[in-house]
Image (tube, helix red, strand yellow):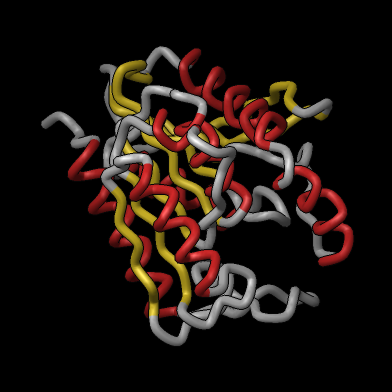
Length: 241
């Protein structure tokens, strides 16, 4: 196994002190880099390990924070924080740009080769960076088929991959259709994978507290979605030998 080094990074965004997780691959040269956005409850060890796994594949990876170091266990508290955020593209972009600035400040990062992936709210933030015209090589989202302000998807300059569970009540078929229509009208190179039988947040291991209705882990599809994201990065952001 390659040697990965990690460190905690604190930075301001959305009026909060965010606490992100930066993972660096072995070696000293510049490498392609990936932003990793967490779901609504916040950044936890699951997404930190995602960044570490990407670093093992040769990427500089930054798992960014959205809640000022908090990980919400109360679904209603989480919704009170996340619902207004998801309704405000400029706030989402601010959080995304702050994390991107941290990633770009890392000397190992190749500033011309960056992708953004995210889960739930973190995926919505990745999409908003694309709609803001950020020069990304790929965007990958799971459970985040959010649509943006009219016309702004035309600024997306990279392939977009999205995954969702067929039984997700938070991202229902009407939302899937709206997302597909937005991407298609904007001329984006897009793909949508629907994982049969999966609920919302199917990628996330079961947690020991109350969750929103319609949330549930699907181990096989969780693994498949991860493999699909890794394949997207291999296609659009290959690591130099």
